[in-house]
Amino acid sequence: MTPPPRLFDAGGTAAAAFRSRPAGTPNDNTPGTAVVTGASSGIGWEYATRLAARGWGLVLVARRAERLDVLGKEALKEGAAGVETLVADLGSPEDLSRVVERAAGDDIDLVVSNAGINGYGPFSEVDAGLLTRVLNVNVVALTALTRAAVPGMPARGGGAVINVASLLAFAGDLPPDPLPRRAVYAGSKGYAVTFTRTLAAELAGTPLRVQVVCPGLTATEFHLGAGDTPVSGERRVHDEGGMPAADVVTASLAGLGAGEVVCVPGLTDAEAVARPAEAELGLRAGSGSRMAPRSSHGE
Ligand SMILES: NC(=O)c1ccc[n+]([C@@H]2O[C@H](COP(=O)([O-])OP(=O)(O)OC[C@H]3O[C@@H](n4cnc5c(N)ncnc54)[C@H](OP(=O)(O)O)[C@@H]3O)[C@@H](O)[C@H]2O)c1
Image 1: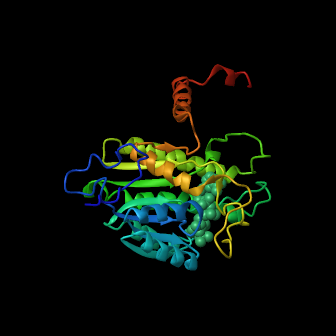
Image 2 (image 1 turned 135 degrees about the vertical axis):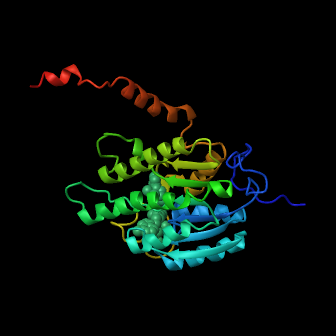
């Protein structure tokens, strides 16, 4: 008998994502239904395709309806249990509330908040409205979708949330060139990292998994667009190169199976993700309730 499709590609290790689920509830070998935002391109398209091949049902979210229709048909051919398309601008509160409602559905086992825009450019020159939309898509929508999905999952025996951030979350105060001018984008991705790490700690011991993925440069359409206008025409990739989106997704799903909360797909030294946490602990431990002596010298 052909084994059922695996829930997550655990990259050769047993997928531990839902091991703690009680018998009779969805487990490693039971595909469920996933909401994937930003499915019309790049990394989101790859998540959808991969999950489809494992027999998942898909709720595909993005603004470009035609792209979602093409993906939906491909996903069904790949083996998706079913496909819904939700055409929505996650920067619009009305559209977001429709997606939030769907993500709260009691059939949803996985939410992939992948949609993102960059708003790169000199801080003083980038349109202020665009910066607000960066926050709405990268921060507000991601948080609202996580909040919608997580409460119902424990009663169903488990579930997972994957939030797509960026390696730029860790670029700190490195100056621009060759890195982009990115204060708001990096801030939004830093939020995704801190939010997801902190939530993972809060949910420890439950059958839920949360993961934040921090890709470096990835070969998608990400650098083709201007502002937040969708790229027109056929699906293609920018000229900047980068890791294939399929590899980002392989790393993410393998990492989720292995319980990796912070997944940096290109990181060879897996221990390096623990070092920021050590530095944070040192900073907190070294900070008391009395003002540091150096501050009084400035008076
Ligand atoms: N490519 C990289 O180098 C790179 C590196 C690190 C992190 N990332 C992150 O990876 C994620 C995916 O990006 P990608 O590289 O795959 O780029 P992409 O090819 O440009 O895809 C972005 C996706 O987000 C969707 N999206 C953008 N604005 C939206 C909105 N207002 N409402 C709904 N959907 C929206 C787009 O769909 P529509 O236009 O059809 O709405 C598209 O499907 C992003 O969060 C990005 O920040 C990318």
